[in-house]
Length: 153
Image (cartoon, rainbow, N blue to C red; front, side, top):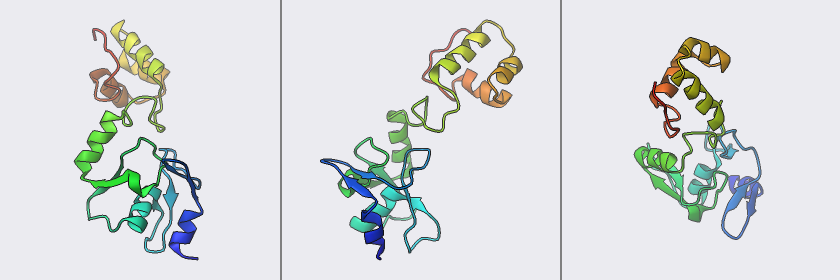
């Protein structure tokens, strides 16, 4: 069976998106192991290579749609890492509870910030929320979860 055959049987085509039906990584993107790669890779990148062509070194494959498991080649395009990062930020994928890898939800972070603004020591808040002092400090400075309103501390 060819890579194309193995790939296409794992796709559910809808009117717009092609949904990946096989393994979905916790970040929401599909994974696939083509014969030309040593390890599994992102299914949307494989789709681009199968249907469009090679991906230049150092480039990313981005989605026009906002559906991570979509592998429709018409929805995919090549972009620089900076464009990928900007896309992630615009769609809030790197921040907040929409990120599938997030340890906290928005309410947790608001509670942490509320405790800090009331004078609770960072070490205590870190222990209560089972996180590191460093991670909590990044949240307090707005380096993580920066979109959540901060109080006076």
